[in-house]
Figure (spheres, one colour):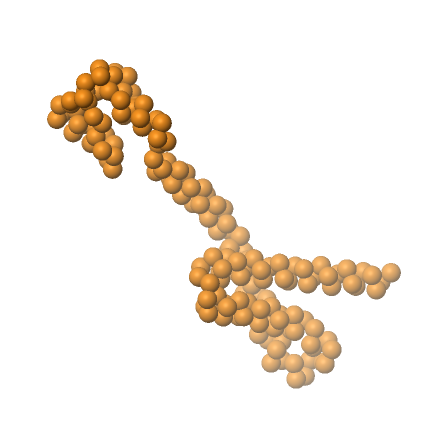
Length: 161
């Protein structure tokens, strides 16, 4: 029964170790770099740090504390730094999600209206094709980036502008 518990504990510890390093890699390497050599180097650094942390826990027990300091101290230093990195990333996850949501909302608001709405708005209510200059200027001032609406503005089309 104790062998099963040890195996379960090792599997849980390795899953936690891999999961935390995968999270750090995604946030610090994948989300900040383009595919290429820099991303591969960043992935190699994260893998090397993860292996040094595993080595810091395993090697002194297998080979004794003498002679394994060269792998143990970087692993333990990375273990401490990893705690602070994960805490900082977790604390910044909420503002990140809120900022992404705001950017998506802003991008959705900046999309132009569907074509059928534009046609319904741009058809003048009076049927006249000529418009006065003041109406066109006010349309252009109200909707920057869009061409002014043709024809005189009626109460029905003014609600859409």
